[in-house]
Image (cartoon, rainbow, N blue to C red; front, side):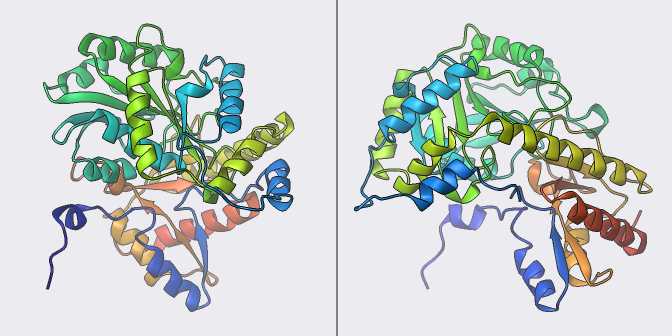
Length: 398
């Protein structure tokens, strides 16, 4: 029998999605599952995007330019300019979701055996993207006791070797909800410049910053303009995850030239998705204000409810819509599966993402889970009540 590739064998399962079969079985038994495991907002997609879908009168759904529709790129450039990021349409490449933006950027800039440094915990699929590209992930660890702030710059610099080619930052952070400050990013810029590294910046949650805090983009850092490669996506900003439209944004012409060659190899990003993404850029400001208020209410309720549970620690997230939560349990992977296989409360249970999958260092995150506060308040209340009951009776409680 033919053999699976080494990469196929080594490819990690998603910590966010790997428990889906257990959730399906629970649902088949009539149990309601509160999905706190995945960043799929229940916020309505902007009406301007839905109207664009409804009124789309294309007679042929044709290929687009490999870099993306010019009209979309020009409109995106204007969006960035409005938030203080000076780019033009030739410095933007439209991709099939943020995931393709990351893989194409890695393929364009990294060789097999090169290393990238990422503060952990981090978005789990970076492990998969790195493996696909033959790249080694090295980590510096942020800790819950410090609200998952950027580790000391000295620790990051210690991780740099002759094979290090770049640093990845996710801001606001998935999975922790931490918002990196301008000061932290400027410190990071000093070692990026000193060691001539790429700075890959995942800023897809830019619109979700709370408590009066403002997002500062890596594209606004001075002195490393040619080093920064921005990843973006419409998925979370406009609650249209299934649209699969993302972008690479960079001032570096060589990177963009290489990326476009990979773009040509896959032909183009989804044509209908680009039409809706372009319409989404006309979303009125009140949409975001309403979304902001909704997430603030959800966050505040959830964090308070979690910290009232005995033995539970949940820092206050400053951005995105996630939190990494420390639980009084022996093993988060076992706990997450137990919730779906063996537990119910009033015919309800909760699905969470074990945090171990968001760390690269073995053993870390064993008693932590990532929770996404993407459910409306009434649903969130049911989920928190159910989780509290589960923790009371879990056989592996510590």
